[in-house]
Image (cartoon, rainbow, N blue to C red; front, side):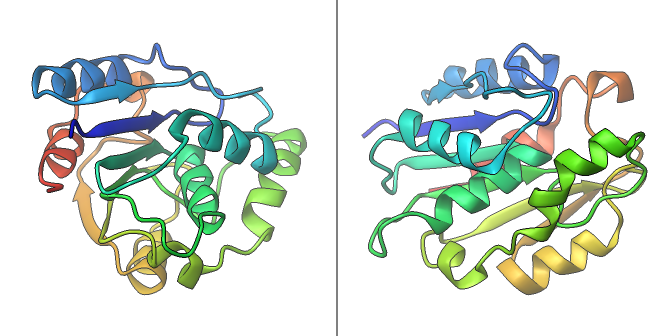
Length: 190
């Protein structure tokens, strides 16, 4: 079977971001089938519509399904995994800039959007039973993702954590258009 990778962009993001385009190309060179969907209403993401979009594109998850996300895309993946049938499994999950808490949002409107994502609990046990492993990649100078998230992902999801130096929130504004650790974490999934 061909391994399928679904890459979920972040809040305000799109499939056209340089990092996601690079990752898609590199994975395709390695024989993966890669889907980078345009998530609905990315300027004001909502849990329900993002989870429904994941269900629509993934269809039937299996051991050859790999989920990768950036920022709020990671949250959407966690919440999607919660909804799967108890016996469903995916091959692995790789996150960049995942968060359960945020800081430095710029407006009341941003905090309103973030509120349901921050305050709607995620049932860790309903997530981890579907995956062999989560790899979570953080930057040591991410302005939005406080460092407490590193320990939260280790404790709640038994995530393997990678800390990158000086990559901000892993956007092109931060100068991040390639990320070898992101690619390598996906390639390591058997």
